[in-house]
Image 1: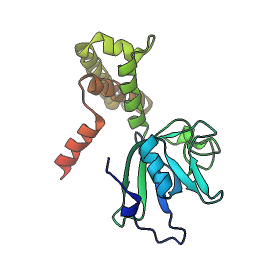
Image 2: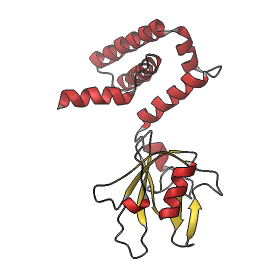
Image 3: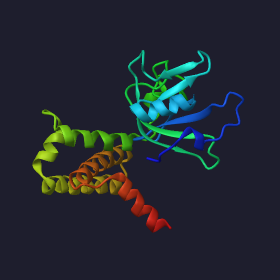
Image 4: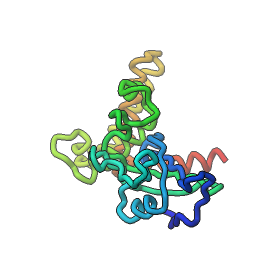
Length: 207
């Protein structure tokens, strides 16, 4: 994370505030837009809980101080003009006061239809399962079985995916491909790899 000081930023607003775009660090989904002053930025960096300046109330406010839906700071950076902040967070609940994941949703029903970033969310959940190893979890049972068994499962799901593709069964292909992706994510976690490393390799090949 960059060491950011408010004095490093530039604001072209009469009130001197800097807009802050809030993004989910796992799914990369944009959650909301708010504003920061020096005190809000300093408080955010000091506490790890994202804090803003409320233009309507004219005071500092920490997201979640009444609802409990805090935004836990993961990373923060400014843009090329140094007049906007990008704040990556781990949200503890909905970001919007309406109860939706993002302020850019029409309503709560959008969550069911919007799958943006879900694979990253699933990867983060699998990582959490690996750390906590909760009893009764299928993911836990996979980690307990060992890498050889997990790899075998990936192979089985790959074969089943191929069978559905060759047979031209679209619904079956979606189902088996989903199984394959899930078990591959488990295998990556078990071997200490991440989606970022896979993305980096794909980007290297592309370039």
